[in-house]
Image (cartoon, rainbow, N blue to C red):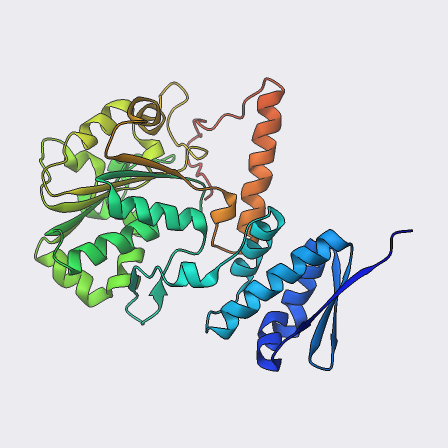
Length: 341
């Protein structure tokens, strides 16, 4: 029978309390995922179990304790990410992530990358003229791009911000929706408005939009234009056709930055239509000045259940692919149907 291994760590009471979480929820999560036991005795934290797992857990706790001591917040998303990095033999560093602040929201909350994948994405947006951010829902593709755009705008690096996405219909034709043209397309652009309000504030957004410095429009409005000195974000790019993607990319003028975001697993195109994002990945990979950043389930920063859902679908799609039955992303829905996000 293998002898139980043990490591003792000295820790300040307030740091230990933050590491344990409310009602010891963080402690239970670490025990469950790392297969160890934690015991608090007289200001010392004992970690018991298999030697390899105990050493991993000790490394994780020391890194988390250092980040808490330096003032970083510990939440469920950060804990799960730190555990995953540690399990794979890496080292979690909250200081490295928190030190890469992009901007602050209108309420003063810092906007920073929360994972290494997000940090690489932000670095690419700083360095390259065109960046493709590809990954599942909840990985911060659009939000981080919006933060970078607003920061560049405030610094005077660009003269305006242009946000666009294809207005793909889900069971109803746009012409049958009530209101004028702007009212018809606004529901498709709502996620972009939400991010702008949070980072820039409603008043700042309205003021700059009235001046024409911020434009939020469906992709069809981009045809025939040349976009100079602008920060341009194309969201939901998986729903572009090949012709739309080519049209958009050839609108780019001097002094502009472009970020294209999309989730290749959530297409709303007809089954016989090829996604412009799929083609762009094949055609433009290796072109100097263009970066492709792939985010994964590890980079999901929404509720932990979202990460589990993304992983479950990834596993299912891999299994179907191995069995020779690739999961179909591009299903045509019947009238009145809507695709859940």
